[in-house]
Amino acid sequence: MNLNAWQIYKRLLSYLKPYLGFFLLSIFGYILYALTQTAFAVLMERIVAEMDAPSASAYIYLPLAIISITVARGVGGFIGTYCLDRVAFSIVNELRGQIFSSILQLPRQKYLQHDSGHYLAILIYNVEQVTAATTSAVRTLIREGATVIGLIGYLFYLNWQLSLLFFAASPFIALVISYASKRFRRLAKNMQNSVADITHRATESLQGNEVVKTYGGYDSELLKFQQASEDFKRQSLKMTVTASLNSPIVQFLVSSALALLVFVALYPGLMQPMAASEFIAFLITAGLIAKPLRALTEINGPLQRGITAAKSVFEVIDFSGEKDTGSIDISRAAGKLEFKNVNFSYAEELVLKDINFTVNAGETVALVGRSGSGKSTLANLLPRFFDLSSGEILLDEVPLQQYKLDSLREQIGIVNQQVVLFADSIKANIAYGSLSAKSDAQVQQALEIANASEFVEKLPQGIETQLSEKGLMLSGGQRQRLAIARAVLKDAPVLILDEATSALDNHSERYIQQALERVMQNRTTLVIAHRLSTVKNADIILVMDNGEIVERGNHQQLLQQNGLYAQLYQQGFEEESAVSESCETNS
Ligand SMILES: Nc1ncnc2c1ncn2[C@@H]1O[C@H](COP(=O)(O)OP(=O)(O)O)[C@@H](O)[C@H]1O
Ligand SMILES: [Mg+2]
Image (cartoon, helix red, strand yellow):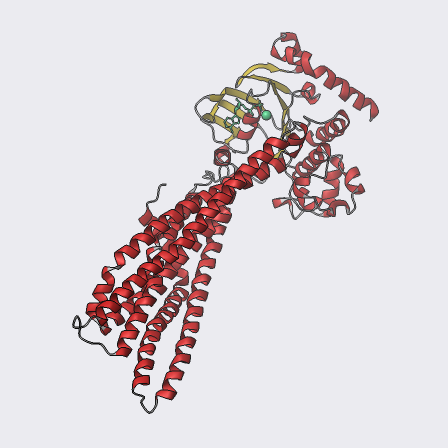
């Protein structure tokens, strides 16, 4: 959905509703604060007048007035800022929750469209921008707006002719200010880009440290970083120049206007003579007006920033989650799977073409084929990570989309190449999510079946051992076995093994092979492998090429066909079966 600026305003306002009380209170505080400015100008007039002709009570009420004004200013400012920030922080909190919830429910396709940095930036940075920018705009509007109105009113009350004269000079001041703020915005944007560049360079070099070192990237990385850093320095300096020239120029213009006032007021015969106290009050008030006026002219910048940020935030919140219109709740499926004329494409090109096969409950189907032939894609259709382009997939004779999404996913355990481990204890990683109620004994048993208990017991705190970020302290094989343990604990009737053993050394592979064979018993298993002995024992083997099933049958039949399977077998399955045979003799 594409929101225009007005819709975004309205939507932001709707977030304000629950906090309307605090918001009104902050307006009250800021108006009080603003009035003290005018009160100060009036006070100056009174002081000078009383100096001229003291009244009996002046020595009491003037000092009291000074203190009251200051106290009122402090109280007003505090109430205004506290209440407004309270509203702002509450809204950030609420928006963050909504963004995160939306991100968790994103369809897989959406994750693939952007890198995770995109969503992180929205969650962390943009959301702050929304309130920081709009809050500062609102603060300025109320506080400086009320100040300016009060001061202008007082000016006209004192002498309307001089006021008009003074305001004749203001367009020049406005011009300087608007030039400076445009430049500011451009520089601020440049600086943001520079910072992004610096971070980008640094993270890339940190993450790719090994490549940088082994391929001699030191000099080029250093050079690129220095360029980015140098660029930031230049932008910062330009910012300083603009900032430090801006205010003397504005001050010069304001004082020129004031000089003109003094000239006109004092030039003989040009104006009605004013009381000294009023003239001084006039000059002071005119001087006071410059700053809030300037703040008001700069209100648009942050407001625009806020609107832009809000737009990206709302876009994420508005993402539609996964389609979940099914109504069937199954406690435990038997596990019969059926693909009927299934076609699928990520974008335009069909990645799966007319897939048809059936697996009975408890059977194993193996997918074999070159990389890129569509095996993982086919497996990802079962938990409905993606929706079909056409055709049907049935679980226990019922189309997948008729099940509730949660209920469907309950039925499926997955172990794939990329093991996901969280920075938590081993136990929490195995008994994750809906498995969190499982007992320690059940976790231990799952580790046992997954051939993982041996190494877990050697860890300092056993299953309570905390894994570092992404479990990097473990070897690939160990991580893989933890992933298997997680699937074992889930004990789902359908199991997907997507190259669960690729990229492992023979020793770990043997362990994992054993573990997998135990896990596959009594469930429907879809196993994807280049070089797995399980393929030989599968009830059906489907050979995929370019999105199609080109051969099917059991090991013997396929070898006799002497087609693609036989070819793949020659290339890779031989060494693999040698490994598994030695494994069998060992155990
Ligand atoms: N998320 C995706 N978006 C677009 N194309 C994809 C995506 N994932 C895989 N593909 C493409 O789909 C085809 C099948 O990929 P995949 O199922 O991963 O193959 P396999 O698992 O057999 O190696 C490949 O051509 C691949 O480039
Ligand atoms: Mg794959």
